[in-house]
Amino acid sequence: MKIAGFVKTTLLDYPGHLAATVFTQGCNLRCPFCQNGSLVLPEYFETPLDTKEVLSHIKKRSSVLEGVCITGGEPTLMPDLHVFIREIKDAGLLVKLDTNGTNPDAVSALINDKLIDYVAMDIKASPADYAKVCGLNSISLEKISATIELLRSSGIEHEFRTTLVKGLHTEASVKAMAEWLSGPDPYFLQSYREEAGVIAVLNHSATLFESFSIEELEKLLDMVRQYMPSASLRGLS
Image (tube, rainbow, N blue to C red):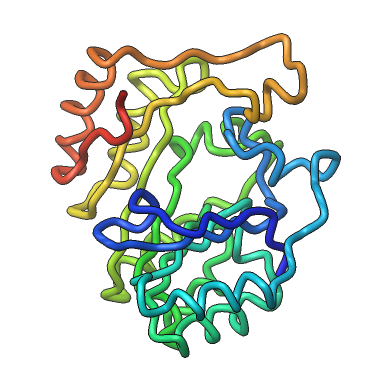
């Protein structure tokens, strides 16, 4: 495991549970609004943490912690993710996986082996804009759709979430995204916040992004709820 960060205790990353959070290093997307640029861009990588030490700390606190959130980067790129999670499960803890949904086979294997209890999947954009919003020339929408349907059919607890960015998302594209995703699942709209670790900032991009106002987000939420009735806003300050 390439572990680039470790938060020993959090109430934010695993809904309803006291958890630790593990940040993996590396991602197959290049979303310019990503706030974890140092986990995505190789030129900013630092020496990974010792996996055994991270696991040792988690196990020592297993009587206090309820779960572990594994995020990134993109955790499903880790070839030893199964082994890592199995050790966490053997300690009696719940596991939440954050994923961009590009690796349905990996997610399916984790579900089949009963190694994950909750999945949060990022939905980046409408189908027409997906590759552009991810900072790529092309992307497999078939794999994205396969992960969405996998989560819906598996019975595993899950949520979908989208970070809305003015400059990448419009009212029309958000409507197209919600119509495509359409369903009863928990769905969270999050607002972009410019920070030092954002990929566009790290790359000294001439084009930076803006946040939607609360009023604009509430208007978008009303529209999204026509297709995703359980949608709500998250992380507004």
